[in-house]
Amino acid sequence: MAPVLRTRGAPRTAADLERALDHGRLTVRYQPVVDLRTGAVVAAEALARLTDGEGLVPPDVFIPLAERTGLIARIDLLVLEQALPQAAAWREQLPGRPFSIGVNLCVADLEPELPGTVRALADHHGVPYDALILELTETMLSESGRGHEQVLAALAGLGCNITLDDFGTGYSSLSHLRDFPVAGVKVDRQFVWDLDAGGRGADLARSLVRFGLDLGLHVVAEGIETRAQLVALQEAGCPFGQGFLFAPPLTAADLTAYLSRPAAVPQPRTAS
Ligand code: C2E
Ligand code: MG
Ligand code: MG
Image (cartoon, rainbow, N blue to C red; front, side, top):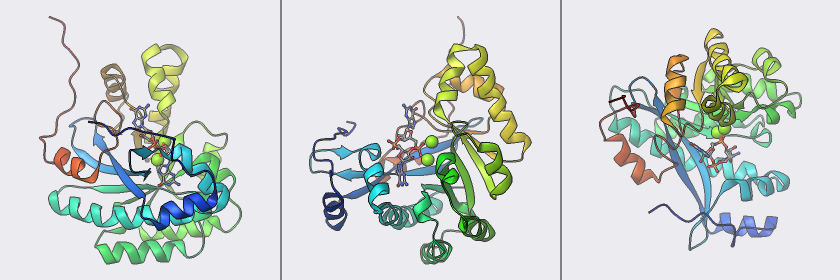
């Protein structure tokens, strides 16, 4: 049964959050990213949760507090420390197949030490740098000051895939694509959902996919919930996607089981 997502027991102050981290209450869920043509899982996105004994506290409840209090860098490091050994195990489970791991970063993470930390952790766990997807939202990059370009360039220089998350929702996507070494975009779920309604919103979603592909970027559609959205994305040539149609964020054990299932794309119903 799906775990209960709860906000009671959520940390309210920096001290609460710090105590939760000290007590090992940060846990990670993994959402598969699939090849939309074959249904094969090509990556997983690591998503932070806090356990509170009875359920899980979702990130939108504690990430803003973590960002305000500077604890976000500690959280993101803890996620990397859990996700990298997991990714190494899944790569072993899938010999000869590509499998990358995505983590979400924020501006506070973009310190000069970050490339060294990523490198040391990836080396320690035997994960190639190019199997790492580092997701940053456009809004965060807009707030980024000078110096972050060098950090991103160093990470890209290692081979890590810098990816613009929630693509299309910010105000400066185009300048980010020009100024930062971006390897991929994740089309925001709102655009994906607009595919159901047709019209201008759906045109925009298809254009965002084509735009990313024209720039030679990895394009992932987020939040795919319906077969109609999947078919529209396939028709637009969108190579990758994630969403509840395939799987919600899963425990590591559940993703291990999901990976051993035969790959299949949910098929649209044919008219009878
Ligand atoms: P995101 O990186 O855009 O992550 C995708 C979010 O969409 C996840 O929510 C996921 O559960 C949700 N989602 C995926 N498929 C569907 C779908 O088909 N329908 C719907 N309605 N939702 C879907 P989640 O896990 O609650 O994460 C929310 C946000 O919190 C993330 O958005 C990310 O910005 C942030 N976040 C999560 N974990 C971390 C972390 O470790 N570090 C940082 N800095 N931010 C994190
Ligand atoms: Mg993300
Ligand atoms: Mg997103």
